[in-house]
Amino acid sequence: MSVSSKLLSAVLALSCAPLAHSQANPPWSKGANDPAAQKGYVFHVQDVDNIPDLHGNPCTAKLVILIGGNQFFVLPQLVAAFSKQHPEVAGHIYYETLPPGILRKQIAAGGALTLGNLTLQVKPDIYEAGKRAVRQMEHNGELSGVVEYATNNLEIMIPAGNPKHIESLNDLARPGLRLSMPNPAWEGVANQIAASLRKAGGEPLYQAVYQAKVKSGETALTEIHHRQTPMRIMNKQADAGVTWASEVRFEERIGNPIQGIKIPDTQNVTAVYAGGVLRNAPHPAIAAQWLAFLKSPEAQTIYHQYGFRSLPASSH
Image 1 (cartoon, helix red, strand yellow):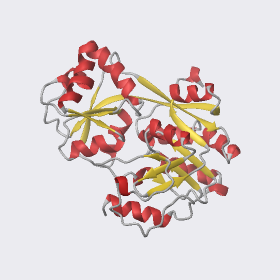
Image 2 (tube, one colour):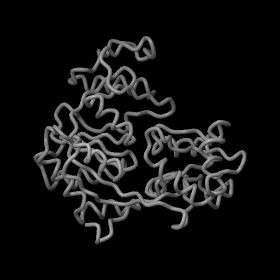
Image 3 (spheres, helix red, strand yellow):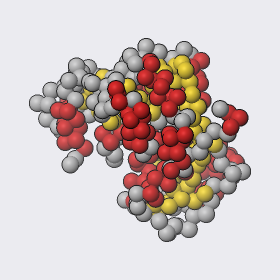
Image 4 (cartoon, helix red, strand yellow):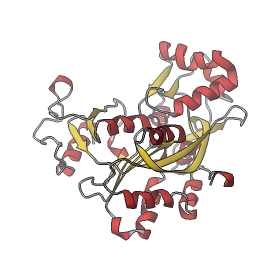
């Protein structure tokens, strides 16, 4: 099924949302001919279907979660486990796993997100992302009840068998090596990658990967790195990309021809994930229970299956 037809199917499935446009509009309507009369934050990615990062029915949701996309593979198990503990919300949890910066733009647009011909309106309860962004939103009064719940570090994602013989971050500057890298404009991981590159090879390595290669076209920036980087590698459009280690573990776990090159601790960075209840959340009580659940032994076990780690005991 094409991206356009999937978007059209989404319109049919979510037609209860007041901003959803009529399915009578042709699926090829784009650009100046886009019939969406009321637009939220407009998000369109050429080489990836956005729909896999939207889950559930916002019309009947009793809990709405906007969470950084690199946790997309953890959410099905987390939601199932939480629903067993809270049957009152079972089948009524809606969540999005887009990049954190995209989700912040959606929040700023009043919860509205426009994908192709579809404008979807949600009222989010929870925002989850990296600690820095979450704490800044807490400082600004946008979030409350912030909880820190897991950590992660970086890894180089490559095709299985390592055909380009990549051994380290310094190899990423090699001429002719094609990279898929997160865009600093909206993907927070790009800041951690920049710090890691500078640890490994100083400013010259960062400039080679994120400046010179971007200009030459050897580095392709992403809008949804957790989808685009593995897709580009498997489609032979990229030779490598830096991602979170958990994303490599997920691709390996499902049998995709992907492997990882570990980055030494002296060159790596550690991300801390956090979440909070959004101001004016429609379901603040259950939202607070979700955040508490993330630190429970059951939730932590699920995270560990994919390479995430718990916070040190001193951080709890």
